[in-house]
Image (cartoon, rainbow, N blue to C red; front, side, top):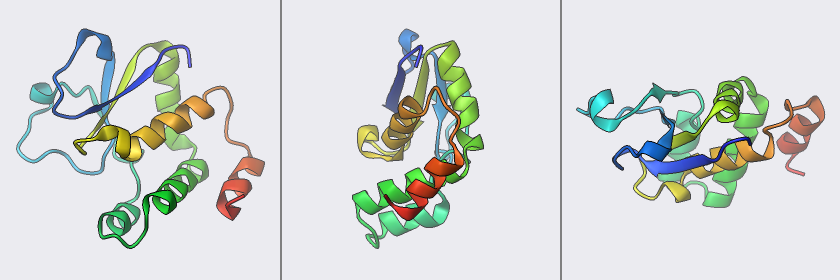
Length: 134
């Protein structure tokens, strides 16, 4: 990446070094205003599917399985990463999470994915590798 990607809790105050702040979740914080939170964009589709997030939050799958399945969702839908990759090439980006510990959420996995795949489109071969769990 040309610029670093930061990860923060949605309620952390905006800082000058944040760059573009993007909420990456399917839910919006109840009763909160975009300006109050300092959110520039809200990208629902880059978050884990509702079913996957529900399975994890209800304890049906562990973190390792959640991470594998979420990465699989990203690999099989590369269009979800394109806009983020483009922004990260142009300037600083901060990914915002609803979880109080964003480093232990899907947002850290998303950042990791962007850093790993920043200079390549996801090939058909890599898709099959992830889907098959190799």
